[in-house]
Length: 426
DNA sequence: TCTGGGGTCCTAGGACCC
DNA sequence: TCTGGGGTCCTAGGACCC
Image (tube, rainbow, N blue to C red; front, side, top):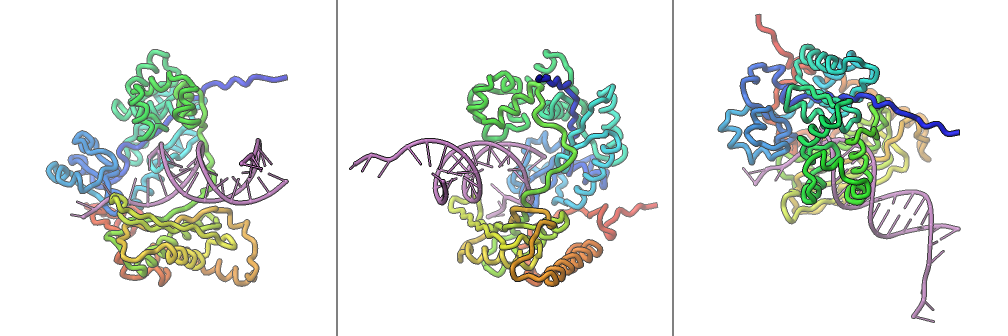
């Protein structure tokens, strides 16, 4: 006999930190509340966070900084390079507070978390409590959207950002839900990106509500199964649950744009070595080994003559031993490098990650060799963790590092560096 | 002159096999 | 001149997210 499982809809909340990087800067420099503020991406390239005043000036998300520099100066906007140590630490504080207030939480990104509100009575009241508590304990303002699915919670949070800060469409009347989704441009629906937004608006689909009402076959044909999932979620059929456990990463990348163009192979080798060191530290901290490494170099991607070269090389034995990784990365680099090109960016990606417990002994390895390498890495990671980044490193990554990225306007690392702590004045 | 970084998933197409 | 069909696996490219 077959029993039909009736799944009662459960409320999902999305908590989204407002203008997160800007808010982090403001926590530590309250006088910034009186100014418009932007935070730049790595290499001071793009604008990746904007205060509300800057949004009102018409500066779009992800805009190249140089294109808006004048407008920014004219309006006395305070500008910061990104300070990921600070943002990472603040993010951790926010998530810790959330964890204390709800049983089930999925950290979705540095500034967002999905919460399961299953079994919670008085949802609106609780949402306000969450919002107020996070603000009080961390200084970070958040918006909260609540719906029957993640996609609806996301949609509600878009509305929340523009209104009081909390928007709940869970168990809302059909009329109210329609009204809310009509307010949301289709490009702001979670899962609809730039390309598909253009495609949809060209076909007369302007809002989330228009999208929701399209027949399945049409969606499947035009947006594939991904689009279909989004549409079902808009209709209140949950396809994505709040996940408290995180699947292990399949790849770890380390890539950077250069502060200025690089031509020499030796400089690229240094940069590649240095990125490889970072990625290797990362996979060791997650107890993983890599089966392959991809190296790439590229010239200015905004020029018509732009060149991109990449190569993937597999390891005979999966490894997380930095010298092995660097050696392989350099083999790849030497094969793809061309003279007389101005490179703007390079990077490596460690692929085919597996738990380090799975590695088998290589043909020419002895247990003792492997043990020694492992001890060396553990020792280096330990020293670097304790005494600050890369006190111990490898000669391969160079000393001068002429390729280093620009980061000219970084705020102090208030929370993670003893030397840069906030000093309280009596 | 100056345009980020780090991920995931899906799809199409080729290689290969029986 | 005629020259199958279907499965799997892998990879590259594209779309999406933050």
